[in-house]
Length: 202
Ligand SMILES: [Zn+2]
Image (cartoon, rainbow, N blue to C red; front, side, top):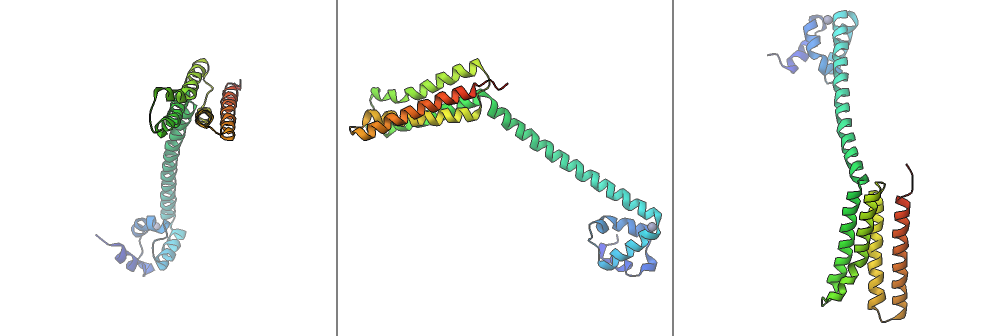
């Protein structure tokens, strides 16, 4: 079998170039991976030979079609992924799951941070529980609750739990006051998120 190198050497004598050689080298010629002299020789040949010119056109078209098919496949895969993420984000149950996770983590870490666990500490989980029940009711009533709302409610619940801890645990008045503000802000945020997410946009 004739190697690429020897073919190129043959091409250095333009008079010996044949249609078969040109057609063999066309893929490399399109990629501009032949030597400069071969590039010129092939160009000259194609300018004079209608058969090879047609062959070049066909090769280019095939390559373009292959590239387009590849691009379309890649785009289809990407669109499928985006659709999957969108479906997950718009599903109320994924919001619930995330809220459960955030509230559970917030309340749980508060509970663990105490040196001794007593049953009355469990009230710290009440705001989180309230958020769950509210979200559950909301998700059953309508399907407009999205992932962002779930995240808002979850984060607000954590702030609420923090406020409650400050309010109840602290013996100093300023810290207790800030705890109350935290609690108020958290409830406002949850309320506004629920109102906003149930806004009749459809
Ligand atoms: Zn030819």
